[in-house]
Length: 180
Length: 414
Image 1 (spheres, rainbow over the protein chains, first blue to last red):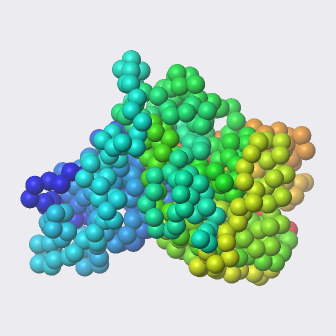
Image 2: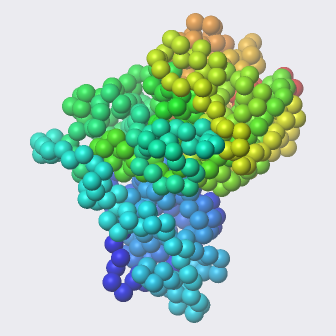
Image 3: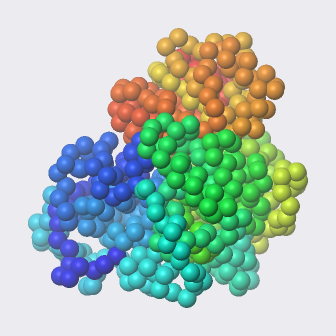
């Protein structure tokens, strides 16, 4: 996760509690492996106009337990292409890890009073969200230091590459040509 | 220090005593990838290095789109096959069945091990006393590269279940009762440890059904202390494992108690797994398709429970019954004991081992307005096909009784 200068500003797409990963990206699209391809089908079953109307930088806002269900990393990938950040009261465990790992910002905050279409300004440095439509400020629940280190590294892959915990191996370039 | 089973397993993997709430980097004993989540995991591995940390500790198989049902699926299979060959990884390919069933029945999981799988129902292996949890593809890629992964050691939520389940009330009804009670979010980040004499008397098949659905409460894993049943099951399958693992008396802080004798057949109504009611509340509900199978309920014991009801009966007109054994081994057991004759005589469609309709990405898809009754584990909107379809979840006995009557039926009435 990178921290954009000056924070994130975007339109809120409001969802309820327990948004599951089948709702975020239906099972039939799991054959796709790229963020832009998956993004075309994001929320297709529960909010069919989302993929067409979402614009780069928009913000997904939800209630409790966002991303419950399967371990498919296709879910945060389907969002990452357009969505700048997901704000929820709480996240399901595997979705939360997957989002942090791929660099999709996710933050916990009381979202009860944020409405669909509100313009939000998120300042990750300050740890605050400002709802410009409703003129209301919220405080983001801070991450544990361990998770913060992964975020600061830019995701899990970068964290592992930069650290000493991974035994360094010589990289052979010949085997990295994959069709997905 | 008093520790839970989960804390003991993490302590062993980390090399020092750890407790719930600690962030740790733990050594992985076994890692499993399949056809859906494998491609992204491999991509991540290649961003870090070009070799898996230990090819003997990685298992690959294909089960979600089997045999390949599209060109995209075929390409994923092709690439993974190449990867397995290059890396020297054991790849069961399309031949053995559903990943979680295969991992357990082939002896890849031992009590006391830390196992990860790129699939949320990896928690199933807790039936053998392993700490097994589902991870995403980046986590898996990093683990494939390094043999290690970060974890927050979970608190334990213990379930003490005692008494005998009544006739036609099964492990599935037990876990649906618990999921309904705890809620879809009720065990997030926790290890669900199941115990009590009801669990003690369960065979491994039923223990797998219980642990399988820990994730439906948000649990990080389901786990059952290994015992003689575990040892007997593993005797012919694997060597090793710590069969003495127990949670220390004072280590468990939260215990929920249940009386199995009071449990009845349960059904999860659309569109959430914790929307659980006694079957009697939905008796007579119209159904179009019944699916018996999946990592939750596709074992021989499940098929036998269904066959007891289906013997000499026929599937109701207008209802499709799809039966899919969870593995080749379970398929053969059903074949040799005559269950397949009962199924095909009844008019059921019996398919080769795979995930089938469970994730709605392959076949057995529900159309708009259709109602499915399924022994699998999820019923979210669009899970088995059209977003305008509905899915009810139940036990194999309830599924079989309902297929015969053509509407949701209380299996105790048969």
